[in-house]
Length: 258
Image 1 (cartoon, rainbow, N blue to C red):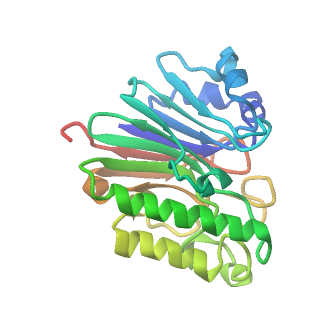
Image 2 (cartoon, one colour):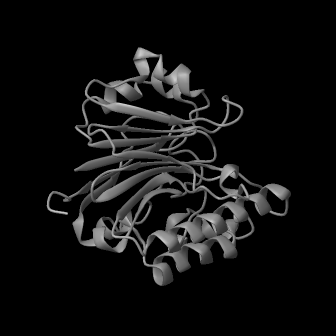
C-alpha cells in the first residue's frame, strides 16, 4: 500500500507543473496534500485536481487562499475528522484532516509557519502541544495512525544541510527538536521515512523556493503509530520532477492483514 505526501505551495501552481499527471501513474492508495491555498469547493469543482478512482476530501482555512489540506483515497473512509476537536482552538493555527478506515487512520497535517521570537512561534508551539495531547490520547485506542504532512520542523542534524547555522531558526529550535524526540521516544510514534531510509542528504524542502538550490531540510514525513512500524517496506523522497519547494514523500506499507 503506497501513501504519498506533498506540501504543494498552492495546488493550482502544482497542478500547472504536472502534479496530477504524475500522481495518476503512482498507484497510491492514499495521497495527502498540504498548503493548498485554495478553497474546498474550488478544488472539488476543478476536474484537473481530481483523480479517477479516488475520493477527495478537503479542509480549507478561514481564508481559503491560505493553508488548506486534502486527502485523496481509493477506499471510501468510514469517517472524516476535521481538526483535533480542541475547544480552546489551538488546532486551528495549522490544518489537520483525518480519514478513518476499519483498522487505521490517515491524517494530512500542515504545521503553522513561524518566525523564532515572535507570536507566530508561540502559536506554532501551542499547535504542537495540542497535537501531542491528541496523539497521547489516541495511543490508548485500538487504531493505527499514519499522519502525513509538512511538520515545519526537522529532528536531527542529518535532516538539515549545514545544520549548525540554523539552531536559532524556527523549525530547528531545541524545543522543536525535543518535541519530536518525545513523540518518538516517549509517546511511541516513529518516522516512517527513517525506518526505511537512513541515507544522508535526504531533504524534502528548500527554503530558497527551488528544489536542490541552497540548504535543504527534511521537514516532511509520515509519522506512524508503533503497530505500523514493522509494516514499512520502502521510503523515498521523489526529486525527478519539481512541483513546489517541497518534494513528495513516498512510503510503501504492508497493511493487508491488519
